[in-house]
Amino acid sequence: MGFLAKLFGREGAEVWPVRIDDANFEREVYQSELPVLLDVWGPDCAPCKQLEPIIVRLARQYQGRIKVAELNSAAAPRAVKRLGIRGTPTVVYFRGRVVVERVVGFRGELYHREIIDQELLGHDEAR
Image (tube, rainbow, N blue to C red; front, side, top):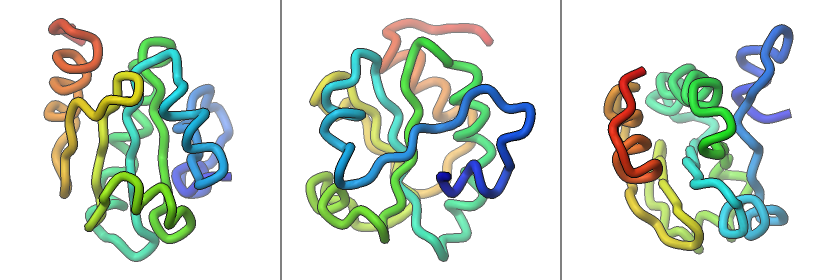
């Protein structure tokens, strides 16, 4: 079970971020048919904990249109190195194998929704 699911529990929740590790990174991120929002977090990162409920809401709001995923930086060193992650939280937005945006540090929900709507989905969605 991923960090976010542990924190918020799974009861009553239909959609949770996909847990990414070194073993499934290629398949779940680079080979995804949907654009991907990847939240890279650290176990002792206070801003990461602030970002958690936003990531969960985004997973639910954009279900079926983008894949929202989480990666524990301490548990996936190869993926972290591959992405050049230097600090957490870092949210990386992918379309195919291409990084279309990278956000380091905490940003609010509207900020992330604008990136999703404009960079991943290619339009403004009023939601």
